[in-house]
Image (cartoon, rainbow, N blue to C red; front, side, top):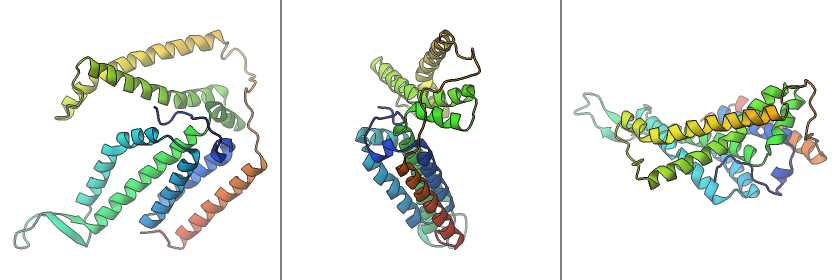
Length: 268
């Protein structure tokens, strides 16, 4: 099941107008960038996970996302832990001999920095996922139209968002089909070997994407896309009293977070 696909629900997040939801997303991203302390980032991550629980994201979606992010997260954490030269050395990987020669050591500062980047990436990915999971695509179009964005550009942006889960679903189906035909997709010996391994996956996906774009183009022509400069919006976003409350709440949280950062808190 694609992780970025809209899921219907009756939670307070689903019922919220798209504008406070986007403001919440900006608030989370800004706070995740300005704070470097693990405690502050952990608190932000916990708030995002609480919202994920309220939205009731299926466990399969979360597990599929973690499977995709596992290797990049391990690489980022390992890189920071291995190559950041901190002061408090936990243990040596390549010790010096009589205090002479190069060495490689795991430092406490490196581990903390690795966890910082790890949490920051998880916060950004989970926040963007919550936004797309709880917001229908026509709400994005209506939001872009509120800013007087030309309909053609709004259509291109929202179509790209819409086809992310479609391409993800095609990729999973192609992988399963190639494995059923006996393709060895688990080989990972060297960069060139990885490229050769995924050629049987990329080619069918590219062909399918080209066919889908041609079908989409014919459907747009059949419906008179671009025939007139005046557009009638199918959906009009309307803010409720609760949306104004959440807008004020998210602005207050963002202002308070920036104030704490300006006062020197959360530096790490």
